[in-house]
Image (cartoon, rainbow, N blue to C red):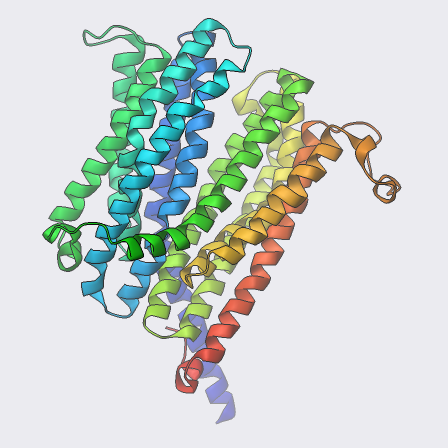
Length: 485
C-alpha cells in the first residue's frame, strides 16, 4: 500500500510540474515575442540610420543611450501594477481592479511628464561632449522628439501590467509586432525621404520611435476594449481623480523596481564610457557582446514576468504553497534554458561575433567577452526570475538592495580595478595568483559582471527561499499542507 501511495505521489508531482511549466510558458512566450519586437524597433532604427551618415548614426546612438536609461527606469516604476492586479485576480476581487488601474494611469501620466522634462534637460549633457556639430544636432533632436512619447509609454506599461496579470499576454505580442512593422515603414518614409517626405536622417528615426510608442498605446487600448476577457475589469467605465494615498502606495511599491532597473542599465552604459579610452575595438566588442546577450536575456526576463503573475495569483487566492511551487518551477525553467544558452554561446562564440563584424581583432575580443557571458548565463537567469517571483509577493525593496550591491558595490568598482587600474587594488587582492598585472580593459569589467551577477543570483535565491518560507509559516496549516495547484 505504501509503495502504491509513493507511486501515486510521484505521478502527481510529475503532473504538477508539467502543468505548471506549461502554464508558465503559455504566459511567457507572447511576452518574449513582444519584447523581441520592441528590441527590433531599436535595431531597425540603428540599421536604417546607419545607411545615411556616420554623424546621424552617432547622434542616434547617443540619443538612444539616454532614452533607454529613462524608459527602462520608468518601466520599472510602472511595474507596481503587476503584482497588485495579480493578487486581486487570485483573490477573485475583480471589482477592485478598475480603480487600481485608473490610479496607476494617473501615476503614469505624472511620471511620464516628469520623465519628459528630465529628457529635455538631459540634452545639456551633449554640450559637455566633444561632438561634431551634426552629431550634436541629431543627438539633441532625437532626445527632444522622443521625450514626447514618455506619457504614452507610461500609460502603455500600466495597461501591459494589467493585461499580463489577468493572464492575457497575446495582446502585447500582436501590438508590438504591429508597431515593429509600422516603425520600419515610418523609418523608410522619413529617414530616406520617400512618399513625398524630405529625408531627415537620424531625426526621422526619432519621429518613428515617438509615433510608434503612441501607436503601441492606441493599439493596446483598442484590443483590450474589444476583448471580452477585459469586460468585467475595464477601467474606463467611470471618471475619477487621482487619490493621493493610492498613488503614493503605487510609487512605494514601484520606485524600488525603477531604481533596480536604473542601476543595471546605467552600469552597462558606464562600462561603455569607461572602456572608450582603450579605443574603438574595445567599445565595439563590448557593444556587440552586450547586444547579443541582451537578446538572450529576453527569455528569462519573460519567464520572470510570467512567474510574477503566477505567484501573485496563488498568493491572492491564499495559497502560499502553490506560490512557492510556482516560483521554484520558474527558477528551474530559467536555469535549464540558461544551461543550454551558456553551452551554445561558449561553443559558437566566434561565429556569433562574426555575424556582427568582419574585423578580426573585434571578433577575437568579442569572443573573449562572449565566453564570460556564457559563464554568467546561469546567475543572470537566476537573478531576473527570482526577482520577478519576489515581486509577486509584493516585496520590492529587498531585491533592490541585493541588485544595487551586485552592480554598484561589486561589479563596477571591481571592474574598474581589473579593467583600468589594477594598481589601485589592495595588497591582499594583488597577491592573488590570478590578479592581472596590466589592465584587462573590457574583459576586466565582464569578469566583474560575472562575480556581481553571481552575488545577485545567490542573494536573490536565498531571499526567495526566506520569503516563501515566511509566507508558508504564516499560512493556515491546511493551506500549507495542500498540494501545489
